[in-house]
Length: 265
Image 1 (cartoon, helix red, strand yellow):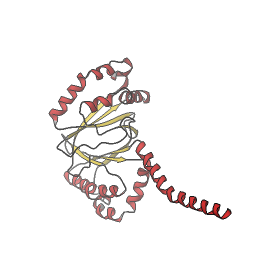
Image 2: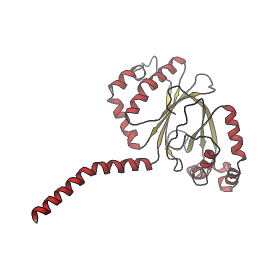
Image 3: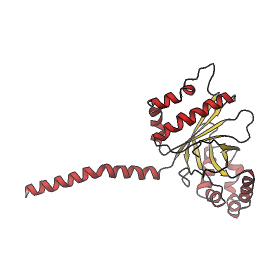
Image 4: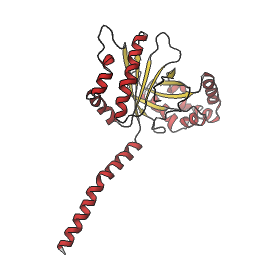
């Protein structure tokens, strides 16, 4: 009996040991899927076309391939539709977890291919810098749109909108309006094809929220916004005194963008 009990325990123990890695992996994947995305929005200020080419070559040939190998599938790269002088470059990187952000730089530092392909950008001398300045924001996705949605690869324009608030409380109330009062659902129903909504947790001009929507062209943009303003559900939400823009939003900025040929968004 003792021998039989020992054999039984050994078999069960072996089965558990074999199954644990698979179970652990499944739990990790399910947990990651349930978590909200994080986004880095990086804005390059440039002074000329030479800098633009240097940054774009780096993004296309070095950065995007390297981060893809680290499990990051969506990097959007955009230029301004109507720049005032030299265009800025906007780079949106999607992270499934904060751990991805934490480990990425270590991965890049040890990636010799990345270092070689990005050398002109990474090692640009002070006398000929690759850019004038980089401004970065870290955002957490809204609960009612926890993951980035990349639109179809067709001719399109993007609108990047930022809502600044006078206080953290006002900013949270505006986020509540999008999440809990159905404002995000209106955008989806009317065909704005939203890419992401994010609350800025680190970055300039806080408190603010930022979101990105997309259109076929400028005429479609105008038509969609006209439909939004006239939408009965929007009129009902916006008529609630506690959700008045005068209380919740101190400034709105809108930037029209076009994706580069190699953009993954």
